[in-house]
Image 1 (spheres, rainbow, N blue to C red):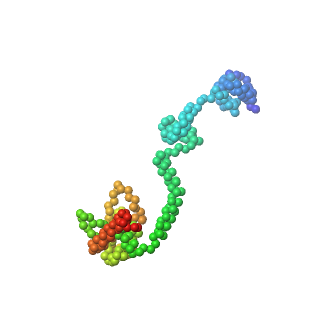
Image 2: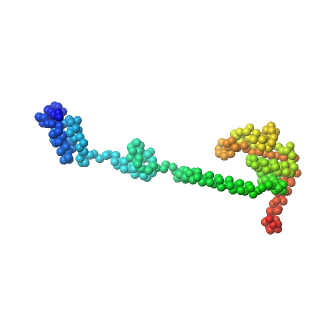
Image 3: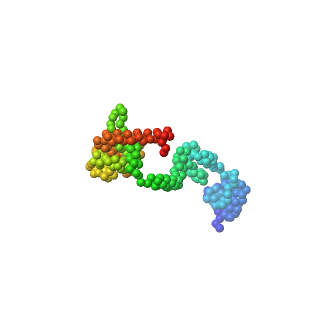
Length: 302
């Protein structure tokens, strides 16, 4: 084992002369360390002022507790963890304590993650999650109920279709007012099924197809040509036979729900020379209302 020479000017302080083996110096250094001396005290006691040699002499020997400096960030760490448990985000903790987000992340990484969503957002997300499971079940129940009701209807008699058509027109068709007489049979709807029933009713009461006039009403931002072709095919006429389409102006402040490929606007069906037909419809409707009144008064059993 090489000897360590301690001479004046050699970096060891020159407080002693002569030679000392590394083992003997290490034994002394370890003994002093275990007695609780600091590095500075050991350095001065053994006159070893070379840090590299001193490090080798004290290798693997822990420093006494009294020599350890307190971590200046211990208080910050404790405060950061406390704020995190209160639900604060990294940005909020950084603003509060003035430390880096990387340090905050290191200090609180074992803590539960904070839910940054607002109560409204949490409620919405919970509802969506429930609906993901509940939605298909409800849709299946809805489809079953609709199919069951459909089976109950069965074939329609001419009388049933006639009364259905009158009620349908009085709900959705144009009506004359006492202050503005306009006894014209004009019907408008966006539901293809409703249009089909209405046209079947017109055939039932003997209105020829050549007395019908068709016109599309749709938002100008929609697929106008596609809608025209759809309705023309639906009612069995050439697209060129349709009257000029009515375009509705789009209000940018309005959020429309009737958009997309399935949006085809409304179809207007007008019967030409229809004054007599209108009066027949109104009279039949009054008869329906009178019959219901009689039932309500108990004069006519159901």
